[in-house]
Amino acid sequence: MFKSTSTLVKRCTMAAIVIASSAFAADASGPAPSFQLTTLAGQPGGLSQYKGQVVMVNFWATWCGPCQQEMPLLDQMYKKYKPAGFTLIGVNVDKEAPAVKDLLTRKPVSFPVLLDPANSVSKAYHVDEMPSSVIIDRKGQIRYIHRGYKPGDENDYQDRIRQLIRE
Amino acid sequence: MIAALLLIRSTSADVLPDNRADVFYSKYSGGGMDITGYSATGRAKITENFAVEANYFVDKVTGASIDVLSQASVIKDERKQKSATVEYLHDKTTYTASYISSVERDYISDTVSLGLSQDMFGDLTTVTLNFAETHDKVGENNGTADDPNVAWLGHAIERSYGAGVSQIITKNFIAGVNVQIITDAGYLANPYRSIRYLDASNPKGYSLASQVYPDTHTSAAVQLQGKYYLPYRAAITGIYRRYGDTWGVVGNTFELDYTHPIRNIWIFEGRLRYYKQNAATFYSDLFPFADSQNFTARDQNLAAQDNYTIGAKATYAFLPDGWKFFKRGTATVDFSRIHFNYLDFRNIKYYGVPQYQPGEEPLYNFSANVFQLFISMYF
Amino acid sequence: MRLWPILLLGLVVLSSGCSIQPWVKPYERDRLADPIMAWDRDAISNAYLDHIRESREGSRGATGGAGGGCGCN
Image 1 (cartoon, rainbow over the protein chains, first blue to last red):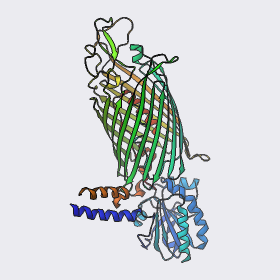
Image 2: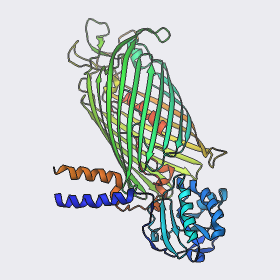
Image 3: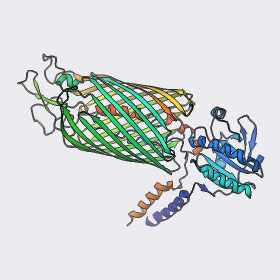
Image 4: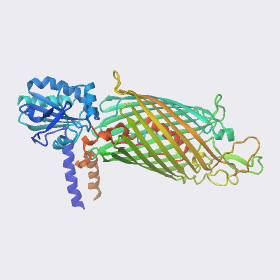
């Protein structure tokens, strides 16, 4: 019993160290899974449209408080870095569109918002926290995943984006 | 005796709840008593990780309970309660500390409580732990409400240890279990209540005497609860609580709630609750003679009883999408009707002429209406 | 001597959640995040009702609830 407990302790300690480190983790590095979704208006949209650009895919929902908090800041960031070859895609995970339409009518954003009601893209990107922001480089590789949002995180986003734009 | 009201009521440890202010009016009428309450509460986040909450509550009692009508004892008149809470969120843990002070002319109570709430296992599980300590000073007003004369009778210390686990089972179902162990020591009786014993020398057939309570009391309660989301957007909640203590009281509580919203404007709720308990070992409605036992009580709270509650609540969002810096504004009315039924406590109102043989008076029962109205502003 | 690995495990589990994969994904918590699924939507009102009951019944304790919600951070 001592041996198996000791291995379990070792594994859990390793997991703890990994998880307890910063909200940014350079895990799941690899090509960003491509996807094809539709906008609220019914227009198709996907990752492939933005080849060669630095892309941030932000997973959000109308029922998620921190998601609402960061939206205006993401919008500002999008407008600021778009000329430099940056795009932000908001992937909404709500099961029903009316609440999304209602929210975006009251608080519009300028970056593209795609709907993922079947959660296929969330699953493909292994989303394990709401909100999650995945930053993808010009070559289509996932470079950073940011989990959650706390005021001040937008500075981290901007640092990473600037870094990838310069590459 | 004053339960710390804020014990297992912490929220999920992922983000601190929104800022909120409430003004609150309540009215209890039943058993000959009317109690009106007014309260104001405010909570605000100072930083994303740190929030404070303060509450002020005033209770005013008018009318006379069965004790007054049967024993001509003095009624209490006003209670003021103040509380302050601080919350600190770090990662997935919320730490809470509260102080509650309750003051009546003849009863002073101070409580300090500490709590911890931890999200685990992908935020599906929340574990809460809490501890509270209350110091009471118990007195008896031997004068009247307008011309008081309070004699301080003793102190009591209460310590409460609580733990809770809340678990998300499916995307529609959340369940929880709470355990709370409370132990108190000191002066634990209600000084306004008396026992009665058979006494042929008294025209009523019985005489009154002071209650004699043990100076310790330990209780344990376990509550199981579950909440299920119905597909058309409603929620159903089931609660069962079992209570037992060293005074021999065993209590069972069953509650069923149904919550039905209409878009983001209305939330309606219906509530059914049933409670049953047996009497404490040293309780009796009528003792055979004076000093028949070491411990004696005739307090209604310790009698064998059951009660049924039917409640309804409606919340209306008059500011569903906010206005200026307010995110949302709601108004709520909550109405409960409770019927109390005593199985071994008799109605001994004395009308000047003995109507019944002692021990043959009708069993006591009464209905109470509880009304609450509050306005909540979220910002 | 055999107790300390279990205690350490407990401490580590408490601080890390031990990377057990949640079976309800964060993007599936829309219903749980609905205010009607909160244990204590109006804590002050519930505390008042508890106070009324505790003043008249012989039972006390174990009421309230925590957890659930959107699980956002």
